[in-house]
Amino acid sequence: MKISKEKQEKISEHILSLLYSISPKSLFTSHIAIEVARDEEFIKKILLKLKKKGILNQIQKNKGGKQYLKRSRWSLSADVYSIYKKTQEQEFSNT
Image (cartoon, rainbow, N blue to C red; front, side):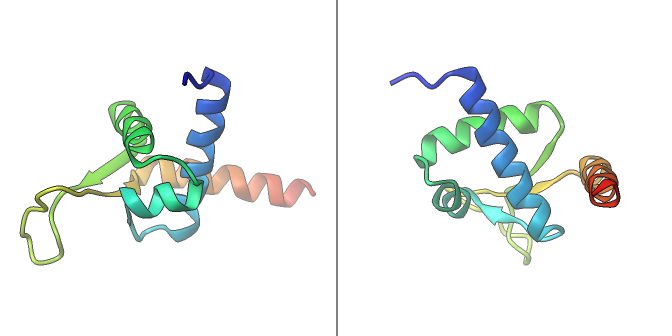
C-alpha cells in the first residue's frame, strides 16, 4: 500500500510535534510508532528522511556510551527545537 506524500508530511509533522513536546528527551523508534499508530519500519523510513534533512538527531548509544545493537533513539536537533519553539510562541501570542 502506498501512502501519499501529503499523508507522509502529516505523519512527519505529528512526529516532530511529539518530539518537541518531550524535548530534550528522546524516544525510541518503537515508542514513536506506537504514538503515531503506524508500522515501525514505515516510521523508521520517515525518521531517516528527517535525519537526512538535519531535523532530527539519531542516538545510537545508551547513557553509558554502549552502542545499541538494533535500536535508535530520536530527538529534535537543537536548531530545529529553537525554531519550532519560536513558531509555537508566536502562534500562542496571536491567539
